[in-house]
Length: 300
Ligand code: HMG
Ligand code: MG
Image 1 (tube, rainbow, N blue to C red):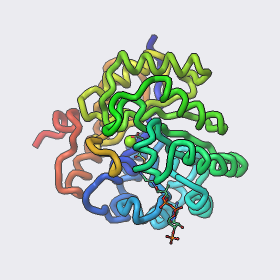
Image 2 (image 1 turned 120 degrees about the vertical axis):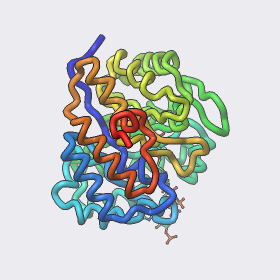
Image 3 (image 1 turned 30 degrees about the vertical axis):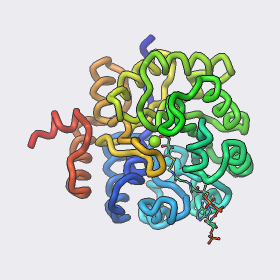
Image 4 (image 1 turned 135 degrees about the horizontal axis):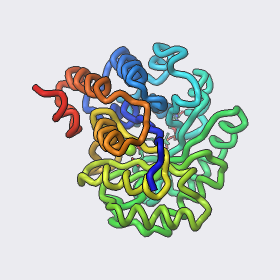
């Protein structure tokens, strides 16, 4: 079943830049965000309010928000917040859209959040409550929904349980993360089915695929076929997670846009402007964008 339109949830400035070896100057990040918005992307995840020692690449969250001013505010400019301290920092900057980020596996919860799955739900509960009370929109990411580099394949029931616990806190949207890109379309279909059975339908669910095994686009199109209407992608295919071995870039926004354009599904973004942005960003980072579509269209 093909929709008329899908929403691209751009994660390049956050998921993309959090995994860069070098710390990108704040001015460059602000310019990146402005170019993404100018290219027609409506939802852009900006940064994370996490301790600088955990993710030095995003240690300038306040400075970035200040540089962006009005452009960085509103429901379509989410930021990651792990705990109440992160929420306080975000609210102080006028943020009205936040994302918490849990894990389907114990090992990754420990590595990424320094606590068990249960303890992380306890950490998120007051964050979600206070964010909703403040009128904010809240997304819940769940990582390792398909496989975990330490634990191997992750059972669907375990994933559904982790997702339900975060959605039960009252979050507006779930994003299922294939952090290490091992998922395949049949698995996507089974997980979405099981989530639906648990009361979390595709209208509440976004998909977040990393392209490690080249499956991100196939997985995303499967999810769209199953009713998902919000799709995470990263311009140029930047991305990864510093706390997950073997996590490479996200689905490239340009690769997604190429497929959506071919199908006549609206998304609002301008492919040429995205490719120019990735080409510009590649110069800033000193290496080519991983996206196949950028390689094909940018020439040399
Ligand atoms: P912790 O060390 O257990 O935290 O980390 P703590 O509460 O014990 O605090 C330690 C120190 O940090 C204290 O300062 C706190 O005040 C301070 P000290 O007393 O030592 O001076 N602190 C903070 N400072 C600024 N902002 C804050 C903050 N919180 C505490 N928010 C914590 C626990 C959850 C904070 C840590 O584990 C963390 O930040 N983890 C996040 C790591 C991360 O950002 N990972 C990448 C994002 S997830 C991802 O990429 C996956 C995703 O893309 C989906 C997918 O692909 O699957 C979303
Ligand atoms: Mg990710």
